[in-house]
Amino acid sequence: MKKFVLDLGGSIVAPEKFDTEFLQKMRSLLLRHITDSQFFVVIGGGYVCRKYLQGAKSVTSLEPSDLDWLGIQATRLNAKFFQTIIGDAACSEIFLDPNEMPKTDKKIIVGGGWEPGNSTDYVATVIAKNQQVDTLVVLTNVTHVYDKDPNKFDDAEQFDDMTWSELKAIIGDEWIPGAKLPLDPLACQLAEKAGLKVVVMHGENIDNFEKFLNGEDFVGTTIS
Image (cartoon, rainbow, N blue to C red; front, side, top):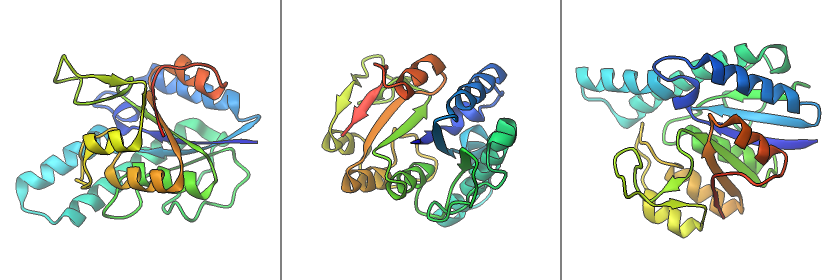
């Protein structure tokens, strides 16, 4: 039985307007592969998380932990949404702690954020480490890791392969709630220490993601 840990960006699961076609394709893909694979899926905060954080900060000054908890609850809502649309193939209980997976025979287990001070990237990394999965898959809204935001800079350079040192030079070492990074710094540090490989690819490209699952060549960035 193959195991995969998916760090699924909230920006593609829960954007401002739901992409029903993408959700249907992702659901079908996972259901096709559960005959020989198990998936641990960690869902990010997406649009609703950003709006709540922006709204809260516009009203009053808040501690970082308050913002983190708000974001965590948004990710858990998104996780329940994703688990619901997967249906009976998924464990009905979303996990709240990456160190305590629900006891289930279901092949798809879904959850969101965990505790203040880290992101769903970190949660996914902890699960990959605990489940002895050597490669963490980050499904986001860009095709690669870039040296700067490709949505803002036309000259942003993409990486097909990169080292942990190269990634850390781009993302820094401080976790900021709601930050848009290819991988949060704490997750980066843990993944490097645990000897994990991380693959970053565009989550909406279902065919490309399936190539990865099948062990074929894919478009994305491999960090090791």
